[in-house]
Length: 446
Image (cartoon, rainbow, N blue to C red; front, side, top):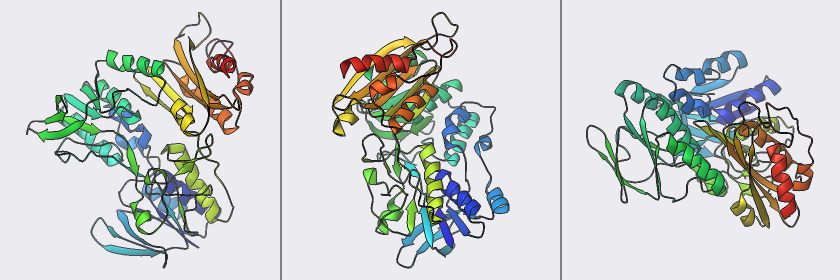
């Protein structure tokens, strides 16, 4: 069997490696349009923030290792441009302009996503750099190191934007953040979001809410970022307003698309073509809580999807139940985490949501390192089911959120969750863990 993979990062290389482990005699070919494969994209902001670290440290495994140790025919600098499902062929060009064509028995599309770039004048100016690939990270870090960037503007205030505001601040750069929405982190409970906003602003980062980018002017010595009633000088402009799935390759070939134009797949990662699978940031997923299709481009699901696709290419009949949208990020000394649905998402999914927000302590009373922790929890009035959890604080969010994720995957009620036997010791939490306290309060409202 010939298994062809398009895309050489999380989903693609996970699938290629697993396919070779399961069937050593299988011919596995990977087409990657860049020269970089298998690297930790999520680690890029932290690396950029540390001048002493080499960006190449983020490479998990070099391309040659896949070729030599696993026998994978990994072809870097090969961009797939055309898919012909009828003849099961993929055509494209190398970086040198040479045309190629490969045939397959089974195909995995793992083309990932691309940074959204506002379509306004001046976005092609030097110093305008998104952060989606390792090559982007190289350019940003080089610009900071060699050109001594003094001022930076970040478009957007999501995960990447906030992580980059910390990284740039750590490098001594004056940071301003701009977004058209008048609310900071609109998906987050307001009490939690307000506290996080205070933390960011306390570090000297200037937040400009309700400001829409109009154009970028290249002054020769820098940039002018022009918004509706605001103009900011910058040496570096980072668009961080989200990503879009690289699905055009698939949709042009007639494959069905789904939420946000992501490639539609079933729970076995199969597309609308029985010979083609898709995984990673380009593919959709099922939301475990709502049961509906969603598009949540996160790292773990990309790797898991690659594994599942490889299993199914090998005839194992594996299904991935879906995602609950678990995510965590840090900005300066603050942690923020979420899993499941927020109030608005729960209403849209047909639930009758009720929520509580509590303010408690991250550790036992009087224990060193004890800080304030806020927990927001959502449940369904009709069924009593747990729907989602958010939390923010300086200590204890990152791993606590996984308790909620496990509960959501098992469709637990809030009452059942409140009776879980969680570990206790003073350095790690109070006797009544914050998530249990929130659940006890929410039970009263259901």
